[in-house]
Amino acid sequence: MWTIAQIYKLMAIASQLSGLPMVDDIPFVFEQPDKEIQHGFCAGAQNCVEVYAYTDAAHAEIHVSDSLNDYSRNTILVHELTHWLEYKANVNQSNYCEDEHTAYQTETKYMLEYEHKINPEPAVFHCASWTM
Image 1 (cartoon, rainbow, N blue to C red):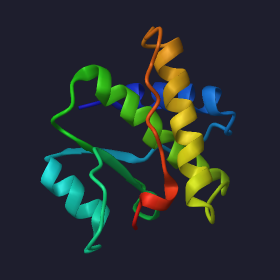
Image 2 (tube, rainbow, N blue to C red; image 1 turned 90 degrees about the vertical axis):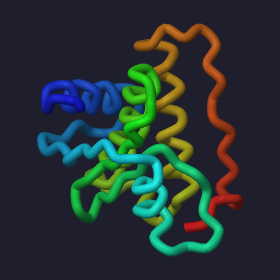
Image 3 (cartoon, helix red, strand yellow; image 1 turned 180 degrees about the vertical axis):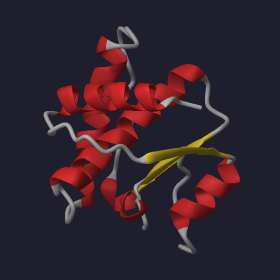
Image 4 (cartoon, rainbow, N blue to C red; image 1 turned 60 degrees about the horizontal axis):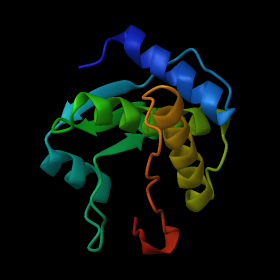
């Protein structure tokens, strides 16, 4: 589990790396089993990709898989906190592809600058292949 201070620090990093404005309110972060993450993300969709986290901005929640190692947990939380900042700034709300692109760019910068991973392999994101 993350403390409020850790979440706030990672959100500040996400803000700095993405260029999105920082906000005072932080979402609730839940760690859950993979099956619950998939159920919450897919919400009944027939063709849904596997994810390790998702942001439910309407309920001020971020859900993260409890099966991730410490490195992956923070990296994925930075990605999801970028979505939270986008939501709070009302940026990319109608453009899912741009929303994900921004989050993946922020995630890659985080891996380089904070996790000191010299050659991160950015996730290949093909928006058309995602079904919501």
